[in-house]
Image 1 (tube, rainbow, N blue to C red):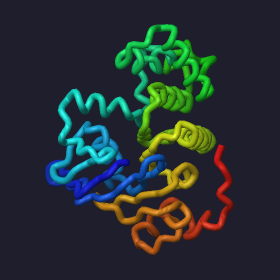
Image 2: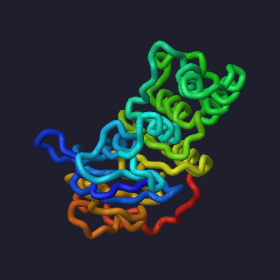
Image 3: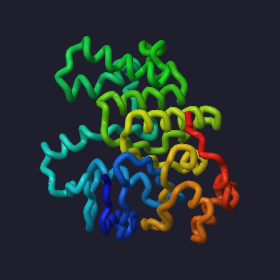
Image 4: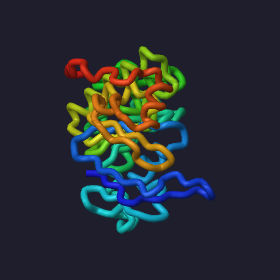
Length: 256
């Protein structure tokens, strides 16, 4: 479980998080949406303590992150898998070695064990045949899939996705959505997805949270989110060209 309790974060005069409060239950997939500058990615950075709050507390399964020393925080981070916005692949390493990197740096697995696990993850995302290619030799969508393989290679309990479909065409975006939904379902991880794409959020999330000016203004199931009476949520839906109530009566088939 992930909890933000009265979290306040300021960069200079810019208040990014303003007494932010929310809870993400174990096993949930929560999408965080909002206009640019709402504090979405800053929330992710707080979850792995890449930055810390000026006030308030972030708790993982009841443990306040600010109470952990460096070694304890390192162990805590090992519970997370992160898909960064730009995939963050090392350009001089092929896809296999990029995915293998966490295993080589943070475990005592031998090369045979690493090979088996990496090939499992590459096969999961449909990239086994591209294992020897450099990031520059594959498409943006394939780079995102390789980043996802690296995020799950350590069997994390919590998965964080920062704009997983950013910069991708609509067809590739929907493929990434389906892969994330499948991963979240079958890995049984708690997942947090920061996205500008509300269609993606509706496809993959059990709940959608909207941040506005550093505060949670709506936190609901996709069906209830699109029916929200909150004015700024309605503005966001309009900006995304999504009519009020869109999808609220659709059959929620299992997403593959």
